[in-house]
Structures are given as structure tokens and as C-alpha cells.
Image (cartoon, rainbow, N blue to C red; front, side, top):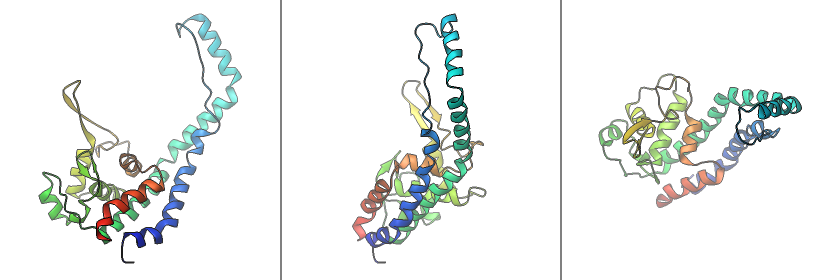
Length: 215
């Protein structure tokens, strides 16, 4: 295996199957189709209340099935995140093998050197970070979620979670990337969302682009 194209070719079927498995969960949200209730005027009017009760009775079976599937989709969050973590692992290994990254973000110089993560300072920029570092942090959190002590990891998630609102002139914390969020164990699904890796093709395109200079 001499370059990123060899790596992509020899791992393609595995990563595609992971995407297929992950996407299979979306059926829980698509079937049956969620019925919609439409009304005019005041939602609290007596007329609309009566119409809503009739709509609930008419759609009782579909609504019950929809609730069950919503609960099942939520229950499978850890399973979905584990699959996403596997995708990040494939990307992590590709960078580890073929990157010559040197785009260290301002303020991270010491931590990047401490954790020997120079190779991961590569790729397009998302939230002022090269995506190689986002992959690095996402993969590490996925693999070591119960014992995450890596300071670089923690700093990357901190940067991902903070966002500034010009309207309110203040900083906010995005709970999707906040490591203090007790409702989350795995963040890998959110990391794939941040990377916009909604398909195998987008994953492959990013790997090819960020590592093509060393082919």
C-alpha cells in the first residue's frame, strides 16, 4: 500500500458497508410517513381542538407506530455512533499513514507537538480547524470515551463547541460538541455531521484531496 489511492481502493468496500449499515437506521424515521395535522386560525379554538381529536383517532395506529420507531431510533444512538466512529478510524489511519500535514492552527502549536499530531494538521478548514484535527479528536473520543485525558482532544472539542452570535454579542456553547454534556457518550455521529460526511463519496473526496499531495 503505497499511497492514499491504494488505501482508498483496498478499504472502499468496508467503509461503504459501514455507510450502508448506518443509513439503514434512517428507515426508522421514514416509515411510516409521519402524518401532519393542518388547521386554520387559533390552534386553541374549540373547532380546532375537536378537529385535532378526530385526527388523532383517525391516525391512531400510524401515530403509535411512529412513536415506537422514534423511540427505537433514539435508543440506537450509541449503535449508530459506533458505526460513525469506525468511519473516523479509517480516516484517522489514512492520515497517519500518508499525511505530511503542517497547517497548525494558531494557539495549538504546543499541544500538537506534545501529542505528536502534526500529521493531522491537514485538510480543508472547518470552524478554523483543519479537518484532520477534527478527525483526530472525533476518533479519539469515540475510542476512549470513558477515559479521555488528551488535552489536544479536549481543546479541539472546546473550539468546536463555542460559537459567537453577532446578534446577541456573546459566545454560546453547542451541546453537540460540548464534552460536559452528560446526555452524550459518543460524539462521532455529530463529528461526521460537522465534516459533512453524509455519504461515502464525500468521505472519499476529502481523503483524496487532503492527502493527494503525497501520492
